[in-house]
Image (cartoon, rainbow, N blue to C red; front, side):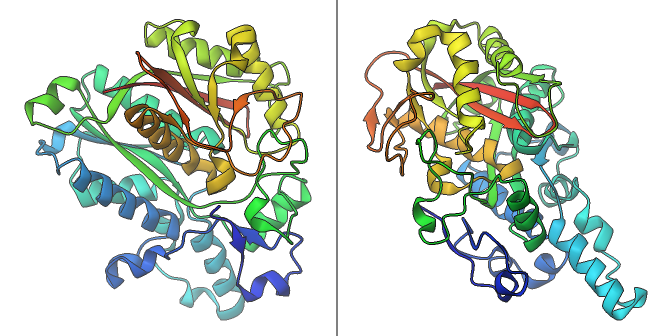
Length: 380
C-alpha cells in the first residue's frame, strides 16, 4: 500500500475528516532543476518527470518534430497554483501574484510543457474528462497515429490534487474512505466493508508509435494498444449508470476496434475505486458484456495499492495492464477481507499466472460527468 497519514499542518488546521492519502514518496520539485520546477504546478512536474523516464526507456526515439505529438490529460489541472495564487491575492495584494500563475494552472499546462521539452510540433492536445481522462488520451493517441497525424506520441495523464479543498469536498460527498486509524488498508475494492476511495497523485506516460516505426529503429516493444472505446452515460454528474450501458458500450467499441470478441479477453484492470456504489455498477456493466464468464476472467483492482490518481489513473493502470501481459501475471489486489457478493469478480490478493496462449486485456476508466473510456491491449 502507498497510503499513509498526511503530515501537514493543514490537516489539523481545517479539521479534515480524512487525514490520509496515497502520496508520491518523493516530491517532484526535488527531482527537477529549480528554475524548471518554479514554473510548473506539481501536476506538470509529475508529468515532466514521468515523460522523461518513459522517453529514456523508449530509447529517446529520433523523430522529426512535426511527426511527434502529445496526447495528455488531467482531471483538475493546476489546483495548487490556482489556490495558492488566490491566497496570495487576498493576503498580499495583486502585485504579489506570480505572472506565471495562469500558464501554470491551465489544464493544458502539462501537454504544453511536454511539447516544449521534447520539441513536439505535430500537436499537443489535452483531455479533461475526470477519472477517464488519461485512458481517453491513450485512445486518442492511437487514433491520431492511425490517421497519420504523428509517428510517435507521448501519451498519458497526471494529477496532483491532494489538497485540503479537494479532500474536504470529496469527504463531504461521502466519496473518501474514513479509515484514519488504518490508512494502509483503506482502499478495499470489491470488499464488502469498503467505504470509499483513497486520493492518490502522480503521472503515467506511454510512448506510442506504429509497429513499423518501432521495429525500424530497433525499439523495445512492451505491447500493443489494439483498441479503445469512449462513451458517455448522460445519467448523473457524479454517479455512473447502475445498468452500466455507457461502460459496456465502451468495452464493445474497444473490442470492435481490436477486431476481437468478448471471448478473447483474458484479463481486466478494473476501475474499481472502492466506493460502495461504483464497484457493483462496474460489475453489472461487465456482466452485460461477458455474461457469467466475467466470474472466470482474472481481474486486478490496483487502486487498492496506489490510491486513485483521478486524471492520471488510466495511464498508470494502462502501464500495469501492459506489464501484466508482458510478464504473464495478474497483479494482486490487496485489502479484500471478504468479497462483496454483489461484486463477484475473480480477484486475488496473491499474484496469479495468466497461463499460456494468446492474451488480450482491457483497462477501464470511468469519471464524473458520465465519461467512460476503455483501452484494449495485447502482449508483444
